Image (cartoon, rainbow, N blue to C red; front, side, top):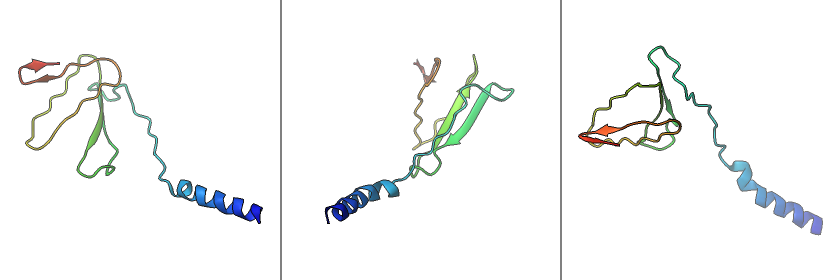
Length: 92
């Protein structure tokens, strides 16, 4: 009887774990792979509704220009190296 209860409890406890969504892992290129010194790839597609995530790797002294779009926001996260962001007349 105790053995059956323990097995039942283990099954109940492990049920949410078995149904858990696995987090996909992706290797992202941190070095530019094309002849222009830029590597860009959309990642995490359809993970969050209305959100687009792009992984961009720029080579030394390369620039990327983004045009402001009303209602659209851009967030930069520098993972390796350093970068300069110029917005309007401010440089960060």
